[in-house]
Figure 1 (cartoon, rainbow over the protein chains, first blue to last red):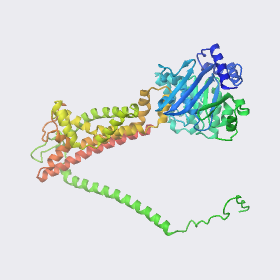
Figure 2: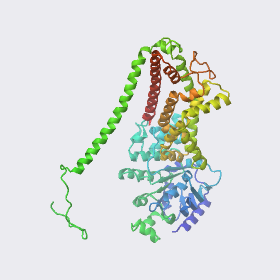
Figure 3: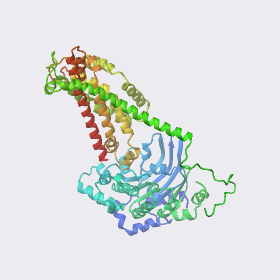
Figure 4: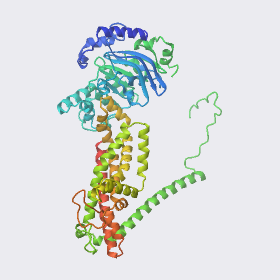
Amino acid sequence: MNTSSLSNLADKAMSESPTRKAETPSARNSTPQFNVAMAAAGEQNATPVIVEAEKINLFYGTKQALKSVSIPFHQNTISALIGPSGCGKSTFLRCLNRMNDLIEGCRTEGEVTLSGENIYTKGVDTVMLRQRVGMVFQKPNPFPMAIWDNIAYGPRLRGIKNKAVLGEIVEESLRGAALWDEVKDDLKKSALGLSGGQQQRLCIARALATKPEVLLMDEPCSALDPISTLKVEELMRELRGAYTIIIVTHNMQQAARVSDTTAFFLLGELIEMGASAKMFTDPSDKRTEDYITGRFG
Amino acid sequence: MATAPAPLPDSPSPVPPKYQPLASSSTHLRRRKLASTLFYLLCFGVTLLSFFLLAWIMSGIFKQGIPYLNQQFLTSFPSRFAEQAGIKSALYGSVYVLCVTAVFAIPVGIGAAIFLQEYAGDNRFARFVQVNIANLAGVPSIVYGILGLALFVRALGFERSVLSGGLTLGLLVLPIIIIATQEALRGVPNSLRHGSYALGASKWQTIRRQVLPIAMPGILTGIILSISRAMGETAPLIMMGALTYVAFVPRGLRDGFTTLPIQVFNWTSRPQVEFQAIAAAGIIVLMTVLLSLNALAIFLRYRYNSRL
């Protein structure tokens, strides 16, 4: 399956169901949704496209970091972006919530649509965008404040002041990130006292607290030990079906384990994208095969 | 060693290198150790020297000043007679002037630093302002006195008042506050800024809720250093025409004033031995105020740090 046929499929899916379901978390318990998400790995019955990048060219100064990258991401699936260091996968991820805007000298061309809306048109508020597209960074970056305050940070930005409401969000988010049982007695303690793996799950909980539609994860496990990595992966599998997750990873086993679809980047270009099962067993491009079998990179 | 691993096919020498026993020594090693010890002694000696110099000066001042340091000294105005002279007007004057300085310089300085560090980016204008601020920090204080005289006293018509004095000292310490604040802001890791933005925070929310609280200890240090500096400055105030004999407590911003260092300077320039002694007493008062300000700074910094 190549990119163009996939995006054609995506277009069809979009026209059939242009708006996504209103509330994502409601989908959490609906098994059919989950099955549909599973099926996205196959070529038929895909869930609608929620985020679609089209012909993204990105420049740092005069250096081109992304060359005409087009990828559709389906709702409630996990997509992995793989490729050697410096291939542009993290840069591409940051295009999807416009974090690249914060980097001086960075210029983006092309379109990214979120539920049909181009996020790069004038009048799009990045504050609004980033509420709907959450992000977890490579290095856990808990704020130097209490665990409770870390989770309540996003909702508070939105003006929620009621302690009871915030408390519910905090508990729900921590449960969602499988951290509640470990920290429920220490909510007032500094988040910096947590272990690396707990900190990263805290960051995931913090992102969930803003109830995003899409969750971007930039190598979320690269600073974690294998056991913490396992926990985060389990968490991703639990979240899938309720959130659309896009993850950058250096760990190909991880991509194979958790993702429905995988996209392979090389030198700023999208080489190949398809169902993970196929990508890791029978890639159609020689370069993909070389990379996943460890022949270079 | 039961089974020595076979040497790699193309390794040049299968013979393991000879190591010296750990307990042995050599001239070279001894010389390196000696250099280490010497450097340690040098640092220790310099620390001791500066400590003893300070202690020596302070003990002299205390010996001279303590007999005159009593309640009467703190609550009397200056006088021709050393026994009746006091420091009340200077103490009040210093506090008033420093209040004006703080109210002016702290918000302006922090605001300018936030603008330069968080908003301005890296353009020609920002660089130009930056270079000028760095230069201003190095301008001799008496030049600020001339500026204060021309600008506040004459052009704006504030006369030789608490207001003029406070603003002049405010200009003097502004670059220090800006540079210290910028340094503190620069120390805030970008990962926290990005984390905040990624949760949908606006720029101001990010600065207000992440950047400023984390930078606060550094900003406080800068503020206290600059206020201490302003407290000890004499030259610019004399230049802009602060009074030297003041037998009243300033009642408003437009009143004349004197400050602790001016009063001390004034007394030391008198020939009588008694005035030297009350100058010493004045220095003790000045030092006490300064040290309490520093203690406050350390306390505040500690509180902010322990909150993180």
